[in-house]
Image 1 (cartoon, helix red, strand yellow):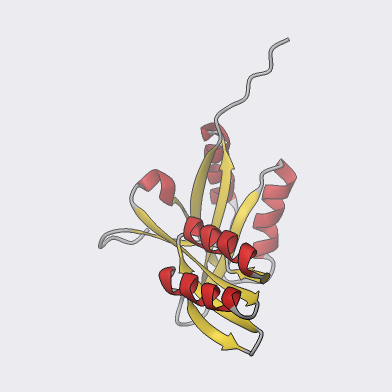
Image 2: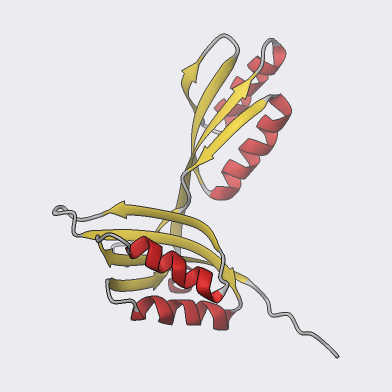
Length: 171
């Protein structure tokens, strides 16, 4: 018997929803019930009267699974719009991270040098540690964290990915 594996693709989905209690649980539940994984999840209120929120989900799967996720999200009642930024084309993705690094002497100096190269901002400092704020593409943050592991990484907090189409049109 031969088992075929389908090529998995990474997709960034933005979902505009009514800002009501339980909507995030319904969306996450839909993913869980069907065995889909969420790699990143962010939610923010986007309207002046607090009635609409935008959910950004990063997920992976074969094209047929991504199409199925898209269709199932659109069927949920409080969902206004589902946009697959990956399918649409050029888009911007960013993530925020807070990275705590402890160290003294040369390792402390090296951590500051690396932070400068990555344009990370020092948001807290003590005589034995720093907390850096870094914004950028997920691979940039991954690289920064990997280097800081060698210099005394203590803790990392990441926001998750937000994305937006390039150009004058909205998604």
